[in-house]
Length: 362
Image 1: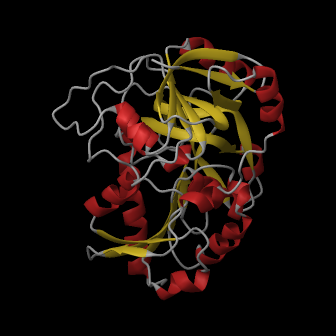
Image 2 (image 1 turned 90 degrees about the vertical axis):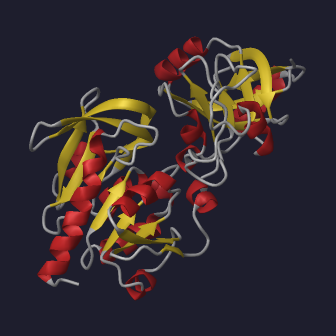
């Protein structure tokens, strides 16, 4: 097997086995702690343009199937794991992990000490890295890496270009696509919602023309402040329609209402993150994937209230508009590949739409 090297912006390098596509990429290096769901992780558009390190040591043992895709085409920049099996075994398997990455132009690195890499990222914070051929000059590549500018248009890269419907009847939901996961569509479908997915930069008037009962703001990659125009649209629409935001949508909803966001040192990426609902004390174990969070001090003085916190580090996990009732959560209640504790949040959104309709506000 050919060799490949990961070089980090702090000068640290890791040499291991190459798999996947034969190409060099530079991107932000992050890690996820999930023990399952590698296919859902790689096809989650929130990882757009990032090199993803898996902490679980064996990745790819079940191969790739047609049912567990969170997007049509993965846009992850690269993959790092401890071990990739030569054979995959699962009754739904359609291709190997290696074949999948080759098809989509994603390089991989295996056979390194991923524990050491993750410990470095936890201590120093996520940083730029580049996957290199074994004969690359590391000194030259390090200088290039440190000068490289990471993209800031990730949402524009992954959002749909045109609106498209999911006609099922029932409640009409307009879903802003900042890099949505298909599991969000599935959860809304379970609740009898007819969803129209729209581009991230749609105008408020175009949304009104669709006559929604409610509006959802999806997950997505990058910095929420990179698309400030969306905040104005959300601020305008929230006065007319119930709004529910997830992850990136949560951060945009908070920014639209006067709160602020900041970048976490190494983010939350993985499953089983405990979240407490402040009003009831209820604890849900959740799926999370974000590098930014809402500043809790910035919520004071706005019309928002904090509704949920992450138990491990007390970061903000949910807010609600005190006057309008619209709300958002930082975690993923759609939670493919799990856990599913927080799926009830979709029921809260449906109840908010129904209450708004009965009240005759729209």
